[in-house]
Image (cartoon, rainbow, N blue to C red):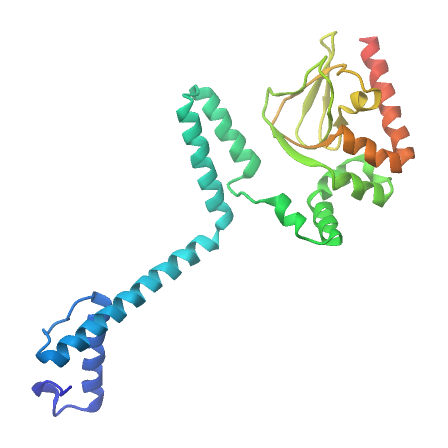
Length: 268
């Protein structure tokens, strides 16, 4: 279109700058800008410009939203999950102290981020999966004398079957007299082994417990209580026996410790 009279004698730079400003005012402000269109050509060009501007604006907002969400998707998943937990607690009208303990559990267990770890590891090759598990459990292996001198193949076989668990202070991880289906390795935290004589034995990082029941196939001989926040790895009885069938020498190592603990419990 012909430039406005006041711009007809100006340089082409000023004329194109004015044209660009007018086009942007149509597209970004989603309006007809400073000057109403004159004639049918201006009307249709302005409407086309507004439609293109609205489309570009919507695409920009959509891409920007997707980018922001993808920057920390694990935290967003955690927040969405915890909103469901809050609604669940509200629906069942749980008491305040229980809600607080659940909140603290989620904070310590997930630390503000949530991943589908089983799905991620399941998609990897076995060498990569074993490498990641060995790296994640490196502190546990370094602190545990049982693993320090063991066959690396045994350590890897054991680690791939462990399941991460978190317990809060005062939680009874094991109750005396129940059927044992798991043993536990302590990555970080302090637990107390409580016997009938009310004698407490403390275990901390690098220790394990609960193996007696798996070896004897009996009931728990003592209770175990978490004294601090405990980050543990559990091993089910089926996985325990499956690994030890391949490594009978390690079964004897577990049995030696179990017999010593049974003797001490008997003395109490």
